Length: 563
Picture 1 (tube, rainbow, N blue to C red):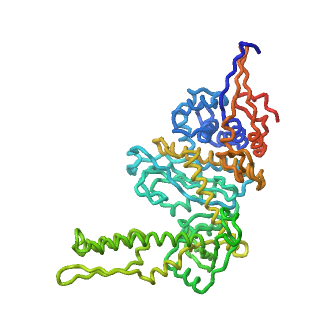
Picture 2 (cartoon, rainbow, N blue to C red):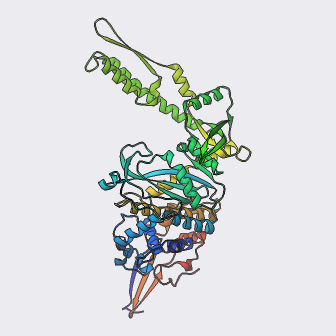
């Protein structure tokens, strides 16, 4: 080298590590073998590139080619920016949507085999993607005489998610959206199934279709299916039991269950249970929140596919000290606000608009309807000979006592046997439902499922599948590193060398964000070398089981990486 030698650097971030990890997962190969494709670029390659886009720099689904060039992705795959045009990527998404079940089954099978995933215990929940734009054509009712494009998978037909006005999980109404259901394993919270849903689909109706999806995607083995209270319907519970599966769900806390809860509390049937949330385990035993349970049995009967089914299941009443304290604070706050409204009506009675019985009652009922605690307020409105109104009101002590007695309480339902699964084990497993919620948070955070600037529902369905596979990579990164740590913390991920007890995928990816390629141009030749890895990067590669010599950033292997 001499003065004519030129050096340049390009930041490639986590691309080399992700490329090796995704290659081990065999996503591209599985897709190319199971899905027909006529494009000039293999479909598996396009899928990998779109996955890398979501993992490294999520952006709207356009000008992906430009991003790929800037991020050195085109060099790695030997492609040009023009080859990764919007039309080709859009057609790839449509093809994925047509073969959703096939693709999910192939990718999940690879993950189960490679990482020895336990898929016998699955947690399910749904979420939404809010849409922006008109979508007038999609929102109109389909013409009964017009046949829509349908997937070509076998028995189960997963259609494209149709934009509709619906209600979100947080209670917002008339939101323009599509929805999706996601299944994650209890083992590492790894996604193993995605169900695309119309924007107005009720969650309670999604479970049986989701179970059919899992039947085709997962290896055939006994399944313990965990979900929230929307699973608690006779049709769902009977459907799971009829397929020899096990269910665990939160029960809808109906009035008769609340009465039973209060009866068991009064008779002191509740017993302490050995459970403590992970977030409180650092506290001394005397300061940890208490949990108590009482258990009864119940039966649900009905017909499934023409045959009679009868299921006996456990009803586990749970009382949480921390939940009771929070609900007591909420009750007091809500009652104070309602009381303020009653006192305001009392002060202004026979004034302003409060001069007719209709208006007064309307204001009082509106105050009661602010919160459920309004049911404990009783009032009496009278009118004297002069036409003046008098208002008396009080707190219904019986109703208030009934509310206090159920504070901190909720119900779990399961057909798992008491012999094999104690109440503590059932409670612990149900609390792991937070993992599916965390994965939904990953979709809406690091992977940026929204905004989804796609018009065709078929492309939305394909993009949801891309996001599920990207989420699978994130989950497997976390699971692999945490298993390698064996309960010990890792240092170097946080500033000031603070310990990380459970490294997240975002932390892992961010740790590779400074990785660069050095481009050396000397006398008409060009050499590319990977910059020196940091100690943290080498440690993570060791935990992930990826030899540094496997890292590549262009078509050729980087030649100066020591094992």
